[in-house]
Image 1 (spheres, helix red, strand yellow):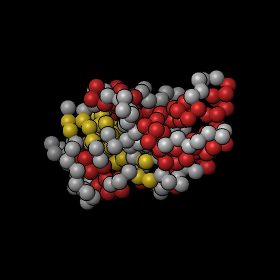
Image 2 (spheres, helix red, strand yellow; image 1 turned 135 degrees about the horizontal axis):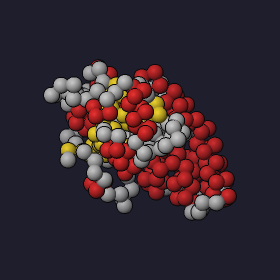
Image 3 (cartoon, helix red, strand yellow; image 1 turned 30 degrees about the vertical axis):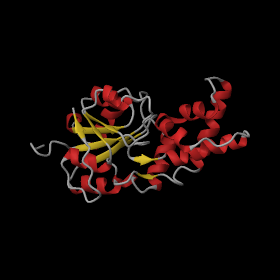
Image 4 (cartoon, helix red, strand yellow; image 1 turned 60 degrees about the horizontal axis):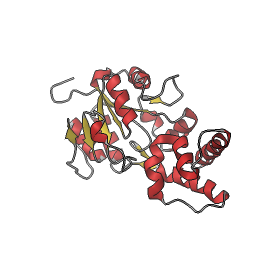
Length: 234
């Protein structure tokens, strides 16, 4: 660690932070709606819920409350989504440039997500990210999930990182809560799946980023993609 480069690594949430998965999730949901004789929901309606997993997808798609019918529909959604796990999913714009910048600087990066491993692992493999990641922690890797700090601390340990020298980037309040509880620096990804009702300025993050380039700026890394200067610190 140095005065100008205090970081050892960056850990990312997956959906809505490292990867733009909403198109595939929306496709799976609208396939189910079509089967039920319902018209497709606009992507703009589905996108803000994509970070919150299958429960949020079923709620927005069918208005079901938890119960037997809800769980059956949730499993059908997961089956549909698993079948198209990486059909349209990509790194967010500038993501490859950011990962290269981290790797060139000797900084490790990894993923800590609440997505279950049977979805996380094929997705990371399909995008050829698995060999590059210093850790991949899924929602069922440990008994605890975010906002509990245990998954972030487990990821840091796997990657050989000091949590105090880690940045965690996410697009949900639970990400900030987990990062702060783990003693990491928390950044909110405003390019992720934030809803109009979200108030990220109240979450207690250390900073906000609006693009992958902003993350590089925050870390003081050279970045070969488009320049963006809206990163902010608190």
